[in-house]
Length: 324
Image 1 (cartoon, rainbow, N blue to C red):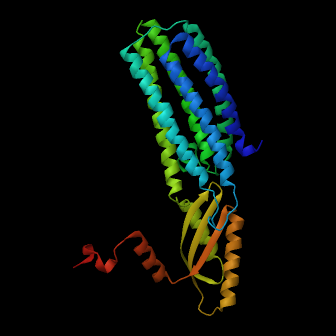
Image 2 (tube, rainbow, N blue to C red):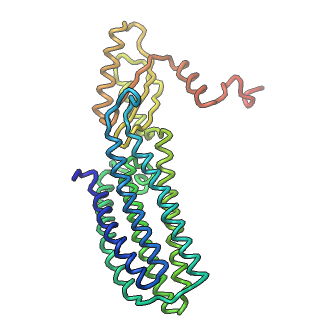
């Protein structure tokens, strides 16, 4: 088992066993929140299979039709996972909750539910711990957990962590809803718990889908990494000034960079080629995730004009705010 897939396999095995147990408990007790949790675990099981498939597809070597490789396939399948969490997890749970609120039923043999919830919390907690430890191990120096969650490029691990977190919280909601429905003799509260679980899953799906979308459309590297690349280029004796660099992630550990730099006027073509090789090697030493690097000789003015055109920014001379 590959270390990078450890969290996914742990979640897959745990969710498969828990889903069967929850469906059995829901059938015995008639609990809407337990049925929602069963659907949740079933969806998570399918999601783990899709994530493993996406990771395998992302490892395919570049070919003529896909010269930059298949790394973004992982982002596509993670987006599919987010849709499934919403459509099959959140929507079904909310439907179950609304139905149970409109036609409430008292729980039968509620002890079964509490036993299943307790066992599920143990296994979900173990799976969450594996995913969290692996995610935490990938933090950069000085990076906090919240920043890592918002900027993570390994969406397979992020998906598992989000799913496991939602599963643990969902189990606690289910337990609270059932306890209150019994204590207050209000079976509608079990339906309310199911509705809340659905809303929780909808939020998890939105968070994961938004992150997948950003990377699918070509998210750039962090400003710190971009500045680091510019520093590497400026350190080369052939460079007068590194104008800027455009970056985009091709996969969790694959980055493409296009550098614009002004070279010394006294250099010949061979000298420029050697300088480009030096710069590329130096960049890859500091950032091994760089798979493709383009270096283009340009003056700062040409670079600024090209960037302004690409971003749709008006020229200073055409800006009405600058008119006297």
